[in-house]
Image (cartoon, rainbow, N blue to C red; front, side, top):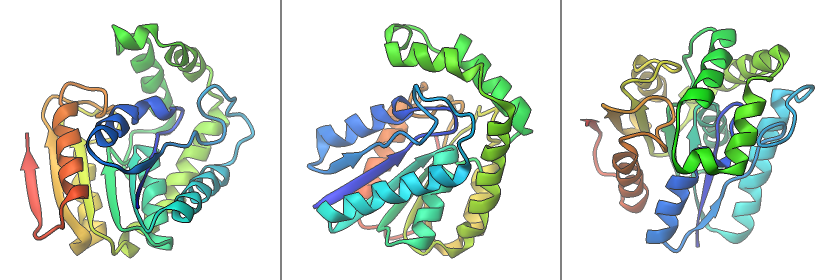
Length: 237
């Protein structure tokens, strides 16, 4: 059986990657896992070290391997860096990095912009979602010490990029103001030949699974996970 582990981003929750999970579940008979990292979701982030985020992701990966012989890992933003750590240190068959935060704007500005995005970003169904409303309230109250745990997490996981050997695909929003577009090139350079392709989403910002080009993102991720990689490619949408 194939398992797919999806990891959300800093201050976020599973809703950041749930649309992609649903897309995959509608098309494949895969076991999909989306853990909530400690201090995230509706939990408080204060006094939660970054090591607990990594440990929780490792635990979810090990649980998947109890049920599945093949495991793919998809990570969004900080979850992408944790996913890179997993791929470098454990058996991961394929890796997808969505807006992975290997490079990012200054941490305090990072949390300020996430809070602004939460206040002003999405309307419609997300405005009616109870968990989203709780997240929106929480993100503006995230303690600064936790922002520096985010920084430490990125610093601790970045060296793992050069150790990744499994096939890897990178997706990046062209309009991302939190993780610059150039980060995709940096990731590709660090990972090297394991990178099968990069897709740039012309109309998407940071939250690529919720933004305008999300269907394109879902399609390229599904195609990569479903098919055997045969060549490197670079795609701009």
